[in-house]
Amino acid sequence: MKISIKFTFFTGACIGFLFFAIFIFYAVGFYYGSVLIEDGTNNALYGRPYSVGDVMVIFFGIMIGGFSMGQAAPCLDNFSKGKVAGFKVFKMLERQPEIVVDDNGKKLKNLKGHI
Image (cartoon, rainbow, N blue to C red):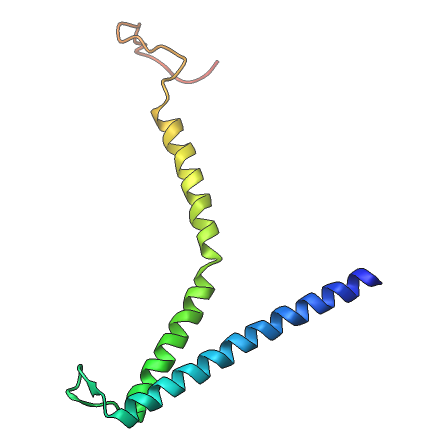
């Protein structure tokens, strides 16, 4: 019973930290965006001051990009598995066969495949 309570507490703490980080990211992003708008900082891409739309596009672009990178992380395991499999295949292709093939061997003219 004590282990399940500790596990539940740990899980809750991790989820709480995750939401804390997300909301801090929201707060800092919107605060900095409002500072850019208030100061009239020039948007070098469009040659005009930042607008609310510019701040929202930047904010959600960074947020969606970060989530996408998080979703791609589990796939890195598959890349390492593919690398190991490729190494084994190339090792097999480069090995020398144990059977020596002689080019001066006897060539059969009538071979039907029956033993």
